[in-house]
Amino acid sequence: MNKNKKWSFTLAAAGVLLAGSSVFAEPSFQPGAPWPATDGVHIDAHGGAILYENNTYYWFGELQTGGRRRLPAVSVYTSTDLYHWTNGGAVLTRSTDTNSDFRAGCTVERPKVLHNPKTGKYVMWFHLELAGRGYNAARVAVAVSDTVAGPYQYVSSFRPNGNMSRDMNLYLDDDGQAYEIYSARDNYDLRICRLSDDFLSATTNDVLIAGDHREGPAPFKYHGRYYLITSACTGFAPNAANYYTADNLMGPWTAHPNPCVGPKAATTFDGQSTAVLPLPGRPGAFIFMADRWMPRDLKNSGHIWLPIQIKDGQLTITWQDEWNLGWFDKNPQ
Ligand code: DGJ
Image 1 (cartoon, rainbow, N blue to C red):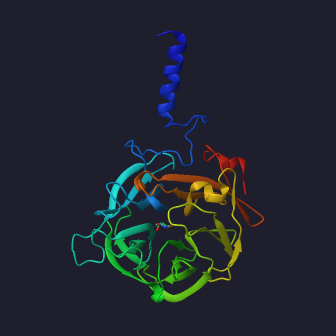
Image 2 (image 1 turned 180 degrees about the vertical axis):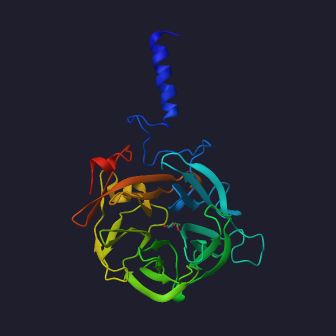
Image 3 (image 1 turned 135 degrees about the vertical axis):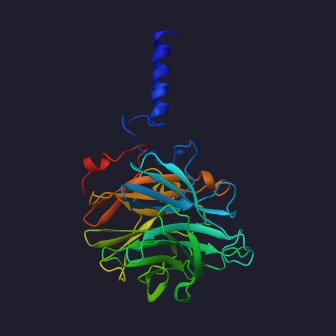
């Protein structure tokens, strides 16, 4: 091997070790690029969100490998550094009981998990569409587990206070109260509903956020103010994000224009909001999480993670080909 060849071989090996990162000496995020877990396979957790427990991140999402409506429904991946993820497999599986609302053939989207300290249970909520009924059922469903990494048992599905419930997210406030934020009235309304104390059902404390035809709700809180990033409703095709702010979860909420900046900002970088991850122990550090849907190959849909900048109460999400958590040190809020 001549000297040059040896050098390029060493670089190539380093590239593999760094999981594809090219610019950074440390691990990095490459928004939209294939993101293999430690098993070498692209992370199959879509429309999801992350729960942080005992120094570990648990990333729950739609499990699409092998088909959209087969038995495995929700996956979990675990990480201690947010860059490297281990596949924990299916944590929620559709029922083989042909009479169940949750039987194979039903559609499961946007799973989110909270821990309830009062009951000790982990509670998952997700959007459920009944087998063979397209998107007409418009229900939310609940599953529970005694352990964070499952398996979760299906409990029930319903329309909160009679409202359709499609795209959804959960929000756990500082006072321990939890909320469902959901698209209702054929996605024209975005609503927020307080959950019961055990997080297993909806209370009647349920109000309209906005009637702007939005979905993909991704809430977070900073300095006592609530933020809610959303998408428009164009199926799996990307569109422009917007966001809402409020001083109180039950409103009033104020709409703001697209916070995205950079190439393809008008289509949320060809993605759709799914969640915002607050970095534990780093006040003001938030990661925007979006899906770059590939409707004909959902399992390989991309993950777009970008840092959120907040200045004078206004959000900016700027495209970066590559970044790492050091960004938050260089850009304190
Ligand atoms: C948009 C939603 O945000 C997705 O979760 C999914 O339901 C697609 N529509 C289906 O077209």
